Image 1 (cartoon, helix red, strand yellow):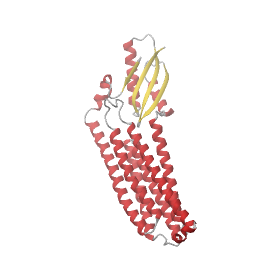
Image 2 (cartoon, rainbow, N blue to C red; image 1 turned 30 degrees about the horizontal axis):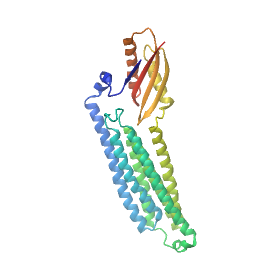
Image 3 (tube, rainbow, N blue to C red; image 1 turned 180 degrees about the vertical axis):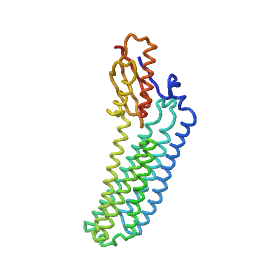
Image 4 (cartoon, rainbow, N blue to C red; image 1 turned 60 degrees about the vertical axis):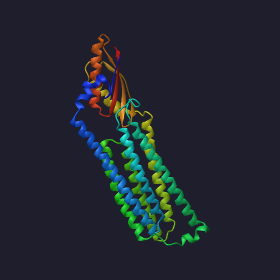
Amino acid sequence: MDTTSNNQQPHDIAHVVEPSIGKPEDDSAKQRNRTVAQLSAVGVGGNVLLAVFKLVAGLLGNSMALVSDAVHSASDVLATAVAYVGDRIARREADESHPYGHERFEQLAAAILALILAGVGVGIGVAGAQAALDLITNAGATAGESEAPSVLALIAAAVSIVVKEAMFWYTRHGALKINSDVFMADAWHHRTDALSSVAALIGVGAAQMGFALGDPLASIIICLFILKVAWEVGREAIGKLVDESGGSELNDQIAQSVTACEGVDHIDSVVTRRFGSQFYADVEIAMDGELSLNEAHERAEIVHDRIEQDCPLVKHVTVHVNPV
């Protein structure tokens, strides 16, 4: 015997949908949309200003590392736009084409962000390596005698570190507040930009002290920072797209909820799989085989409701009853 439900299932209306109808849910949705809009505005506005500022400072200040850092900031604008669109699609209600909802679009957006990061990182790394090679070879003899980066580039890098670190913490706080994987990925995109600016600051400082290779080497270091975060964001996004388990902690939490219900003899199995930022759970329990179908169904409903109440990360529950 199975009893299954999610927020769209008819038999679940009395237990799930009606208590959520009205102002509390509306206020929660409005607050979430407001947070998403704020995160997007800060991400796009902040990165546009920083990209222009660092590009101008890099060109006027004769710093390739800072120009590379400006390109990274410009890529953050696209990253935030992808995060915003991915979040909006993921929050759509279930429909005929997607009866289980659209949550996985959030992980798809995070995977796209990882690809954007990786592409930007490779481009910056190749440019930095080429500049370093030019300085080392005879062809770069003239370039090696070129003017070192100015104080303007140093100041711009320092300002970027402070601003991007602030944007990281702001976006991270908002992502945790609304439980958004894609905006958490965007937050780490901001952090890589802050780390890029640290590398640019070191490279510019080294070049000013006479170590000409410092500036292009900083671009290569920036590339490595970006690729590392791209790998981490992409790996997590893909893991959530391929039915990754909720892990022992969530399974134990579900088991505790089940054992607290009257009439459950024992638990046969608990299996979870990720769906977007939430999880589906399949639970098999054993009950007295002499119970009537109605009695077994009622007790299974109690188990289902208890799991949804105790485990907010669980989006959908299937309870299968085996006779003892």
